[in-house]
Length: 120
Length: 496
Image (tube, rainbow over all chains, first blue to last red):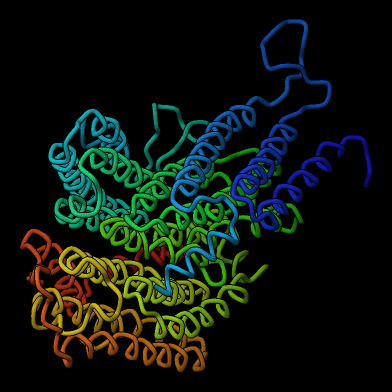
């Protein structure tokens, strides 16, 4: 179970759970985005790890090598990274607007402000 | 030339138009462009549907790269049907948007609004046409990111928090989907859906395949707002601009449900989904709870938009219930309700948009006496409400009838009873509004307050088009049930 080849996957699982936990447990909107980022990054690592071929080198054709790593997951993850960056940027932009509108980035204080709105 | 490239054109048209909108400074030109693109997309979708109805399957190689290496656009009757839903809604919502957007979004932001709208439109169409699991993720994120922006454009400050909440939930959902696709790629080495299906079958006992299936279903369940993963939906629909609510309520969750159907029947075999792991055991109870609980919550809402949003959660329950039965009849009912609910909720939210334009608020107390001052709008709302309940001669009735038949076919009479109970709950929440609008007198407007008048025709006509579609497709079901039935047969692996 603890084979060295699986080392990366343990890291993936650890990061995934850490990120997910941060998203759920933190009330600070910026920290939630950080957690979301860690969560997404773990998936990037998952893809890149599965592209690794034993003894394989970078996928650039050359007579000296016969085994190459699978480049497809890398390419997929380039796309996913772009998506991740866009998501973080948009999320943080929303946090800025929330801060302008509410004067806070804490979830419980926002909920309280909304309740007061509903009462009036 | 154009005819051969229609599947690509369907996605490319709005994608190219979106950045063009940004160069304008006023609202009129981007609005014209978005409307023209929506109608062009509708024509393309119709052409595709006619073609696919004849040939059965349209496979298109993007950039000339053959599948499974290149990205394949793969359209069968099910996609073509969903394409029609999205484009019809957009073609009707866009003419309506002009006044509504002018009232709710400042002039300098309007071009950005139309740009985001087109991107969202493009994403939804892309999800529907693609035959590549990873490409689907990319389009999913295009539509999601743009819909977060659209929702955040609402006037109320709570729109921004709603968008943020949706962003967190939506990203988790999309990432779950990504994990699922990754695990499948891990064991099969392919991303093409048809290729995946062929390669999964021999190894479907593997734990990795089961885990991938679970990740895919949960990820999509978040995007489709299946109970109890619907928490993002009520606020998002409630505070978004009226046009956005109408468009998203009619299309976004529908597309996610379509993907769910696609994953359970085309990527995995129906035998795997409904016999080996039997996803129906998870989805059916959740669907039933959604139908009852969300309808009950809807009764106690004071904001009419939020009331309809909860009703959407309940209606999503109907669709999922149909899918979870795992039979051709069930899937047909699910697909038909996909179409019918788009008409119902699209029409209702457009009517609410008219009210919002004239009254400026849509709390339930604002509805008092509206039947007299906005007769056409309220009449549309009532007809839509009747269809929501499922009164005969409306589309809602057709959906429920099919669903009850599909349940009884499997001997699940308890499902049929619960469907009826949920319809009774719908009567309660629709009646609350009707009573206020027609049986109470509106207070005279205070000094200096503008008198509430009927909405402009350019908004009423689209609203009525959708509402009349409710009546039309409640009587003539050839298009909806006919196509859905054939699509369901193809999906479930029967002879087309």
